[in-house]
Image (cartoon, rainbow, N blue to C red; front, side, top):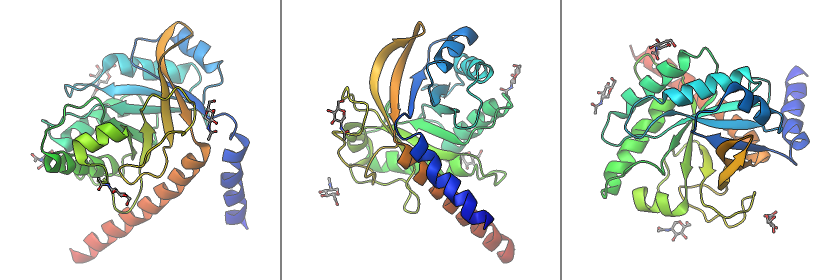
Length: 254
Ligand SMILES: *[C@@H]1O[C@H](CO)[C@@H](O)[C@H](O)[C@H]1NC(C)=O
Ligand SMILES: *[C@@H]1O[C@H](CO)[C@@H](O)[C@H](O)[C@H]1NC(C)=O
Ligand SMILES: *[C@@H]1O[C@H](CO)[C@@H](O)[C@H](O)[C@H]1NC(C)=O
Ligand SMILES: *[C@@H]1O[C@H](CO)[C@@H](O)[C@H](O)[C@H]1NC(C)=O
């Protein structure tokens, strides 16, 4: 009975919010009062950068995360989604471990970690790029060092960037479809114009207007598909079960 009740809540929540699931992304220094102003715009989430393309931690982004949290992006249904730009020439696991340490230092709990594959300088060797992304993907789920279940992975990409770096139909995870933030500029706050790549049938998010200004902050405007988000959560529990089973098998073999 309890399970049924919880399922009903989980099922109907996205329906309630279906009309409006909008957020922003910013990398510029944003003050507490600017985040308070943004919070009053009834945004559902903010994407904030925690790691830069050179592999270093983004301290401005960390300050933004703290400011956003204090300004009210800390309630149920209002999320901070951290993202970083992976560097192909550095160890994938070490980058995730460094990002995780920086995020742990904020004492805020994050569910997702997105990798912005559009800002990475990729090799012309698609196989090398695929191997790197695969290593990064599993490191985001599970750092492989302490066997911690870290974050649910998500990716920024577009048809052309994905095709160029990995090949159109390369999928990073055969078991679970990660969240996609689609970056192709269409000017439409919806998924119209989406062309399949990477195994994605549709995006979870769309950065539809990259150059906007709200509350005096230069930012990108993001539309989210509330139904996609619901399915992501289902996938998350599926992945947790798979990891648990994997760990059990390892223990039995020892
Ligand atoms: C990357 O770092 C991890 C953890 O520090 C280590 O286990 C792994 O061997 C490294 N991989 C490479 C290719 O150096
Ligand atoms: C954690 O935060 C403190 C103070 O803000 C800083 O001095 C320290 O370097 C940070 N540690 C990590 C691992 O980011
Ligand atoms: C990718 O997959 C789709 C659907 O299966 C197929 O129509 C298309 O030709 C494939 N593209 C490439 C470049 O292989
Ligand atoms: C996407 O937005 C555009 C502009 O508002 C609209 O014309 C189009 O019908 C929308 N597409 C869907 C699937 O709602």
